[in-house]
Image 1 (cartoon, rainbow, N blue to C red):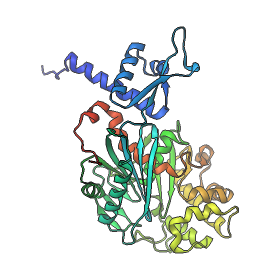
Image 2: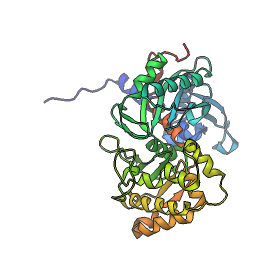
Image 3: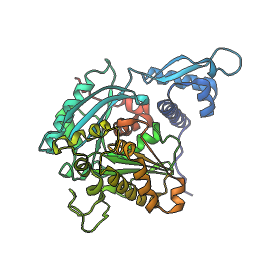
Image 4: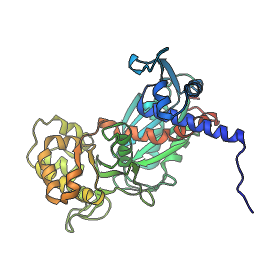
Length: 405
């Protein structure tokens, strides 16, 4: 009889310890400062084990401890201490790459944004030039990190189809990119070797809103991203829906009308041609050279300008297909859709009502992002932080170069 090899007692105990460290760190990362008493209940471990795990995370520079509030006290004895993410601990750099601007931030555990920088994208949008601009911004925000705090990863959100297994951008039509690998280009420009992960901007917006935004505890949601183009990130049953290659959610390229306008993707009549930034800008009188500032233009309106209601209705009609297909409980209106929905909520709702099947319409709510304009940026940070959350000991023991060296 052939039997599978079994881990020795020491190896098994080490695996359990590292699993428990990961569980505690992830809880603090998502829930914020948590008393040891609450962690004891949540993790089902005894107080001494929780104390040991908290001490080890603190030694790794990941957490700090402080007296908890009196409400966290359970039973007799001293009040339970609170475990919180360390302000000066390991960090990642998150990048929100738009068609016209790059936003970069140094972000720590618990989604703490420590420093950010922003620059416009150059006119030619060549990948190597954009990568060099990203690298310069990464270095700028990383240089401000506390001494000894390691950068454990870089997360980049891209407005395009990103292959899940290796981060290859198969198509970013509004950037003019086809089969581009921005990660190695950024690392080459930085001259360092840290993990770089790439994700679709709408997928990462959905991830962040589900983890720490308006979608916390919502198992089925769609985050609709509106910048220059249109995309969607889907969370189904609490799990991000990526598709076979990672390309799910490209709602901007659903073909709505056979005789519609030409889209950047090469097709005609895409949803994006009707409700994308160019269509909205033309309707509200925003000149093409101010397209990058469309969100600010929409935000300045107290009432909807003429014609915006018609676009709002088209937004709702397009969302109806998504609601019918995925039956979400929540649709989060991100990017410039935040301001469009504020101005014409009735038109968006009317469009949704007109084309959604009654059953899925009953359970869905349209809402604004809980994270405001930072949904995509914080989603990129979540993606980059995941290896640290999964195995804090393994990541922090790995040899790593500092970006400021």
